[in-house]
Image (cartoon, rainbow, N blue to C red):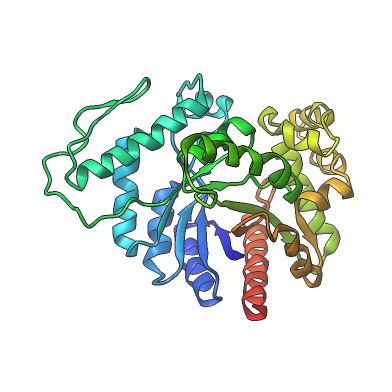
Length: 339
């Protein structure tokens, strides 16, 4: 099982942490798109590394045109020497509309076509006489009169997915699926893997064409209570979003979002954390003492090709988040030393 780590912070911190991840022997480093551009962060990570894979988890697809995304991905792939992985996500409807002023009615079909359009642009830039004319995107001038670059590869595309519909789309068109931090090993095994398999069969692709990269929430430290509370609060924040209800339902917590939403609206972090019980916490996250973390990682063996260690960020000060990333890096280094 490959092991990566998600890093964040200022661009200088991203640069430093990516270099440390490479020195620790990790396979990859991943950048999210919250308050900073995932592509700019990826460039920062690439600048301080020479061997490690660099991926976005995730760059938001729909606020960008497929052409802009294709150009950015190829630029980063060239800069890295073919080490870049393009992780794309749809984002939830409320955030797309309120933050980006973008309306998306059918995210799964649009994501399928988005990936096809990106690959069409790459093919055109290799010199193929192609264009994309779909239901949502129409790109009749995929290049801008530049010289063909036949040597360039298709950058690997991984799609973020939670439910069965988008997981099937991953099986149809993606080079991998990025699991959500809420997605437990059980959920990936029982809900996501069968949907990927259905998509692979539908598109006639091989069984190993779309492996899972699991995004695993890690919150460890000497203060076990504080580490577990940070993970509880992050789970609680994610669980207020309706899109993630299938995960909670699988764990018999379908009614949980109602109470969580009330606490979230009231900004009652203590109540939000209190609502996440130990059983649910341990089903989803690796939270507690550092000496228990290595054994807990074994739960993702056989489910995911790659595990990316990520840390809580909701309600965290920058200092506490840096400490959490440091702990995740230490865990990754210990995993490398034990392999």
